[in-house]
Length: 223
Image (tube, rainbow, N blue to C red; front, side, top):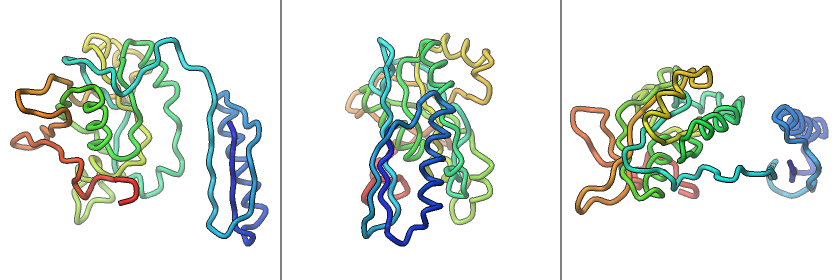
């Protein structure tokens, strides 16, 4: 790992050291030692940029590798991360490696919300994702008010779970293995119908509806 840290002159040294030590400890726990980076003072707020360097497998998964008929898996419940869960995440590195080894080809993390990120995976693969169920996190239930828990689960983001797609048989085998604990099948990929664009269809209510990436509830950087 490389860490670039920029802080205002008013930032206490103890906080800067805590950031560096925290990055080093978490990296070491996952086999990625902190080797260096950059430290500077500036007029903005505290900013940290981490670069991770490593080796990829010969056939790494990508969001563009889904195939029609693939089942879609989510590694854990989503929604309500703004209550603080996003500040104490556990990187899904073990699950990612196990999913790849099990034969799931398409994969990406859920950081900008389940609906938007699943839309991106399906669009990159030139397919339509049918979302049939969602595992709602208890934090989404606690955050519910003007917006429903399901709404939080679809749009909140910063869940840091993984989406994966692959042959249904591979998914069944993965879910039956110890690594599959807490993971759930949430839908499938299919070819677009005549006149239909690649993307996402939500089948979570009485009638299916296409997901619009311009939905104001979806997180878009800079908006």
